[in-house]
Length: 291
Image 1 (tube, rainbow, N blue to C red):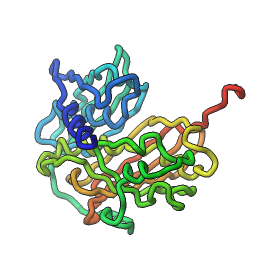
Image 2 (image 1 turned 90 degrees about the vertical axis):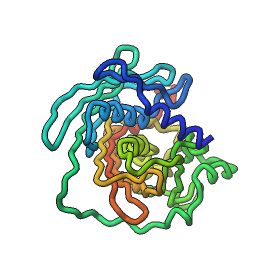
Image 3 (image 1 turned 120 degrees about the vertical axis):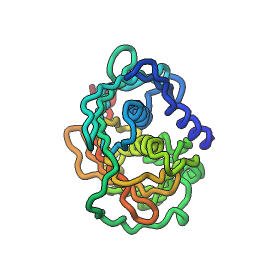
Image 4 (image 1 turned 135 degrees about the horizontal axis):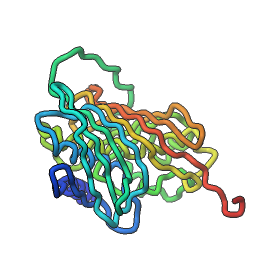
């Protein structure tokens, strides 16, 4: 099933172009459920790539405006903001039922040399020393309310948490959540367009929930309402998306029913590949009797 999910993601990233700057994308899941934000990020980036050549994305900034439906395809409309000598900018609006559900600004750059430095990767166990998250979740006989509803569902990316699901450190209040992840299907290292679109998808996996970690002892997951509000991704180096990447997530603050989360992607040899920042809705569900 996990391989099928990866293959399905590759299929839906093959968008249908219906006009010069209009693309249609099918959905990863089918049925009466919300679209996963990572799918929309990846497809919107793929659509933007369809309007440039010989450039690579280096940053994107997106807003999730409305919940999307998995029952209808998504229309992606591109606006060509600027074509420069070094940088090119596109704006993407995702539309369902005639209304915008998402918008994103994307900046592309030519390949050029420059200074090179990066913050070192944190010292964590290597993925070979850790267990697959889905396998661990399936083996857990009891759920104390901290386990995500998605934990037992295989995704296109394999994940191995440094704090093993169900463990004492995992269940405690904390501010960071390092996870190793890799795409389940081979990806040609030269196809950076596909690799970066896949990383955009992966950059939204379990990100907003990181903001709830300092409050785990107070509330179970089913008492929390969480949703991505905005999302920014910067790509620093080529993405080896089918190799292990450390997804180092941490939260800096929460207030006003919003939580702020940051993350870095590192290759297994310690190179900083990409950085992410997201603000998400983080709200306690109210009992009907208290409304």
